[in-house]
Structure formats: C-alpha cells, structure tokens
Image 1 (tube, helix red, strand yellow):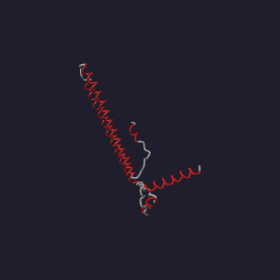
Image 2 (image 1 turned 60 degrees about the horizontal axis):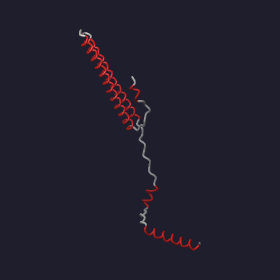
Image 3 (image 1 turned 45 degrees about the vertical axis):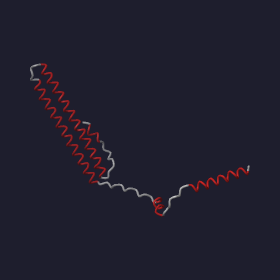
Length: 154
C-alpha cells in the first residue's frame, strides 16, 4: 500500500509540474497597477441644493398650473355659453323632430367640448409637472413629497 501511494503522489507532482509549464504567463504587475487596485474610488459629489433655484422652479410651476386651469375654466365657460345658445335656438324651432335633433346636437357638442378641455388640461398639467421634476433635479433637489394629482381633483 505504501508503494502505490508513492507512485500516485509522484504522478500527481509530475502532472502539476507539466500543467504549470503549459499555463499562460501572468501579466506584469507594476506599481501603478497595484495603486489602481488598492485605491478607493472617490465618491461622486452630491449636487448642492440651490434654494433660490427651487423657489423659482416652484413659482414657475404654480404660475403655469394657474394659467392652465384658467384656460380650462374659460373653455368650460365657453362650452356652457355655446350650449345655452344652441338650446335656446332649438327651443325656438316649431318642428318637433328638428327641435329634438337640435337639442341632442347641443348636448353632444357640449360633452365633446368639456371632454376636450379636460384632456387638454390633463396634458398641460402632466407636462408642467414633468418640467418641474427636471427643474428640481437641476436645482439639486430630490423628490419634494408634493402630490401632483391633487390638482386634477376639481
């Protein structure tokens, strides 16, 4: 048993020697390579919060939201005025079938105008908040905790 162990061990050593000779050469290690491996990377500097920039971004957002809402309410008011005129004209019509068609048309146009105004407002609202998010990032601020959807509930 001792002799077979010796033969096995000898074959193992010779195999390792041959494998070591066939392996590729290792790259040359220089002091700059060692320095680059051991140096700790410097963390990226966090952008400093610019309070004046944030104040301006909020003021811009609020003014844009107010303008968008005023435009929305003006369109809704106009839709009501148009409906009133159309219904008044419809009720001036003697023919029942024509009157009925005119009333239905007035209401359909009103619904279409209100829907269009709502969609335009939502689109403007979304764009205003997207712009604000970019502006606040440019000012060095993270999320502000404000709820943009609150402007949509009226």
